[in-house]
Length: 214
Image (cartoon, rainbow, N blue to C red; front, side):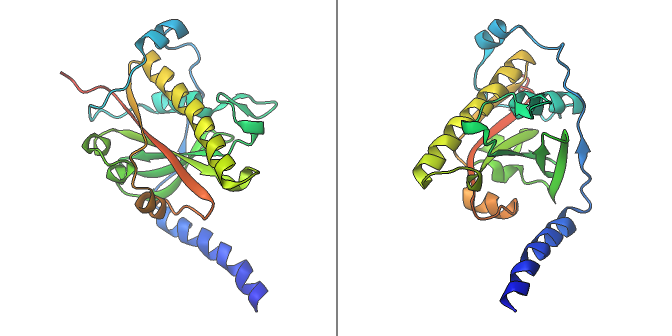
């Protein structure tokens, strides 16, 4: 009886997620446009944090470019990414919080998988501007993919998240978008909303959008 129950619980969990996200369609992303944007040195010059956003949404192409720059696959034959990770564990998942719902970025399939429908942007951070940013990225570490003790796992995840976040900063500077990385996240509430499993830890949030008009 115990073995049967153990097998049934994961199935029920997946079924529950499917029911909650069934009205939220997945988003098939475009191939990244590698011919757009500023030169690297100019992007480095323009890189900065911005905390005021327009309500203008990103186009599908801009969203596709953003996520590929963040941690997309740039060497398909090897499955390796635009951001490095310790021992190539690729333990950081990117959750994308949009006005219409929360998605999980699937770099291998170049798509956004629906997690839950609804506007949860206000849960992506404690600052007021977070709720108005059209895109909030939440970086989540799957600690089960990392070896070693908890301290080493969290240290590696923090470093690997930093690489991804900086990729986002540089893309945004290149594409004239605003962004800011944030440690201030109500992790307990957001983890529950995103249906995170044990062993999945929210590391950082990052808001992205067009800068507010002055």
